[in-house]
Amino acid sequence: MQENEVRTELVIPAPIGDVWQVLVDFAGYAKWNPVMEYTQVDGVKTKVKAAKGSPFERDFEGEITSVEPYALTSQGGDPETFFGRHRWELTSLESGGTHLVNAESFTGTMAAGVLAQTRDVLVAEFDAFNQALLRAVVS
Image 1: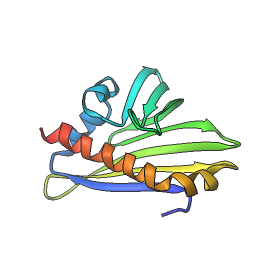
Image 2 (image 1 turned 135 degrees about the vertical axis):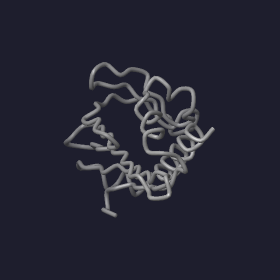
Image 3 (image 1 turned 45 degrees about the vertical axis):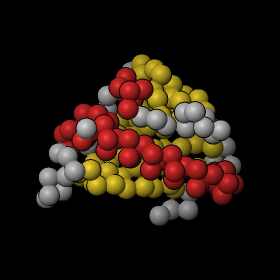
Image 4 (image 1 turned 180 degrees about the horizontal axis):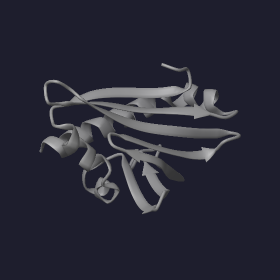
């Protein structure tokens, strides 16, 4: 793991296509995701609410940079001070399940300091996202 990266992983016991369908349905996030909500997706531009209902709740603008089969990437922030590049990668497993990687790398003058203070919170948010995605797909 890179120093300025937060990364979590999970195996979801469902076909990759089922997981992908839920992951890229941005409007549906409000129904299943307790920590993240896309309040607008206009082409590639987004408005996101993260850490919903927690003391760390935050709204920010970003953009979807790639929606390729089984790899979704987005980015946002100020490239000079604090900028994040997020990716969700899905890999099909021989078992019929799907391996999910949920990761974000951060750059900018504040990246190391912010991560030193918030890494555990971000890991918990990513894990909550992963578990919610699992529930949404297998329920």
